[in-house]
Image (cartoon, rainbow over all chains, first blue to last red; front, side, top):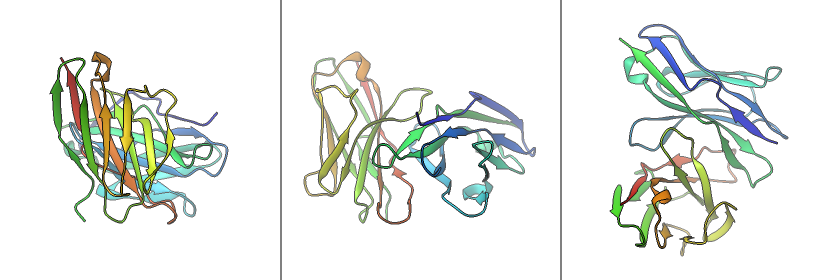
Amino acid sequence: AQSVAQPEDQVNVAEGNPLTVKCTYSVSGNPYLFWYVQYPNRGLQFLLKYITGDNLVKGSYGFEAEFNKSQTSFHLKKPSALVSDSALYFCAVRDWDSNYQLIWGAGTKLIIKP
Amino acid sequence: DTGVSQNPRHKITKRGQNVTFRCDPISEHNRLYWYRQTLGQGPEFLTYFQNEAQLEKSRLLSDRFSAERPKGSFSTLEIQRTEQGDSAMYLCASSLEGVSNQPQHFGDGTRLSIL
């Protein structure tokens, strides 16, 4: 069965420190992976995607993600966290069994402390 | 391009009433999705349209829920005889399929509260 796992419900990071939000996946076809961010009372905003090519993908707001095929992971990273990065982050993978819909992780709450 | 627009942003209604939400997708997008999200959870797929055709509907979706996209542009989601468990954020997203895995773009949602 295809799935996405975000093993951490919450990640706490001090402002200025690097941050990592973890995501692992299981899919039957090629892994097309996405990260979205959600601020309170807002919809989800697209951050970045991996389809093919370089394993390090750069996205919006200084975020990047590293695709690791052997570990089936797609961790979200940022070299220096900002308080404004505090939000809910969702990883998603394209579902090859269901007309290319997305399978969503449960989300990770990122808290950046000043 | 003004993004995906959803109306209303908030809806409070009594149990048993019918409610209808509207979504205006990004104009050139041919796919439109409806999701439901409860607090602290990821989006739960409800249904999606390719142009005006409703191609898939979640098996978990009650028959009290119906969605339309009559001209392949805006869409409406109706919930009949609302129940307490329908309280949630209803999200709409659109995408341009057929063009290299473009991401889904979301509106800010309609928050439904059932009294």
